[in-house]
Each structure stands twice: as structure tokens, then as C-alpha cells.
Image (cartoon, rainbow, N blue to C red):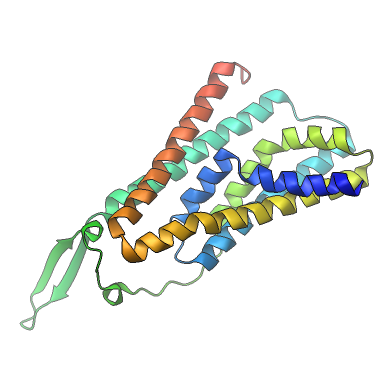
Length: 236
């Protein structure tokens, strides 16, 4: 039984690496100001994912009813929409930040504006753009994790019912699976943030195009997922 529970934890880590999960969290991490915040985003994605799996799994095992296939497909389709929205947000931010407007006042009181492209300036003075941000709870990461948990719960519950023999062991299995997904996504979010952090301090143009690539990939993946589900006819 210990082997089965260990397998649940490892499968949870592997589950966190699925393409739609990676694309969503990568889109979230592009707004992260630090490695610590990236770790928090990945962990909260995993928490939302785990809580949803636990609730759905408990309900299914208690009621002895599997989630209808049509509903599962609808949730997967909603994940596709979510990926497109996240990707568009990243691309929109890329387009907005390519040209940044500065304002300064001359000694005679004249206020002067000029545009500056950060992508073309790798030696931009960071001190001139220091901002104070209040650390807010990353609700978006939690909600994205909840959405992924809802979409992935059907397959996990079927696997759980096939693997364990009791309700208690089923809950333990789902919990360990969720902890694995938290750990896996926390590590992955930091791995995604590392090249973004390095490029932001040394190669401004590369940094922005990395963000653009992440956003574009999320949009393409979301559209592909919706197209695949729509063509399957399982939502009708």
C-alpha cells in the first residue's frame, strides 16, 4: 500500500508538468517580480488544484457516481478558454511595455514627455523606475489551479477508484497526489522564472520576447484544446 501512495505523490508531480498546466503557470509567472513570488504562484496553483480534487474526489467516492463525460469535456473546454485569456493578457502586456512613456519637468516648469523603448536599452537605469508594490494575495493563481483541478478530476478519480480499495485510502491517495502537484508546480514555476529573471537584468529584448513566446504558446495551446474537444463531438 505504501508503494501505491508513493505512486500517487509521483503521479501528482508528473501531472503538474502537463502542457496546459505549464502554459497557464508560465503565463502567470511572467508578471512575477521575484523567484519567491514565482514559488508562491506555483504553490497556490497546486493548492487550488488539490482542494478541488479533494472535494470532487470525496463526493464521487461517497456518492459512487463518476463525473459525466460531457461535463468533463465542458470543463476541459473552459480550460482552453482560460489559456487563451491568459495568453492574450501576456501578449497585451508585451505590446504595451515595448514603448514606455517618460515624463520629466524642466527647471522652467515645462512638463516634457518622451517615449523610450525598453527592449532596445539593455543598460536602462533601474533606479529611475523603482515602484513600491503592496504584496497582494495571488488570487488568479489559486483560481487557475481550481479550474485545472475541476477539469482533471474525472481522470484522477477513475484512477483512484481503480487503485485503492477504501474511502480513507482514496482520500490519502488524492491528498498525496495533490501534494505532489504542489511540489512539482512550485519547482516548475521557479525553473520558468530563472531564464526570465536572468534575461530581465541582462538582455531586455530577449526578456520581452520570451514573455511574448509564452503568451503566444498559451493562446495556441488553448485554441488547439478547444478545437480538439469541439471536433470530438462529446460536448453535444
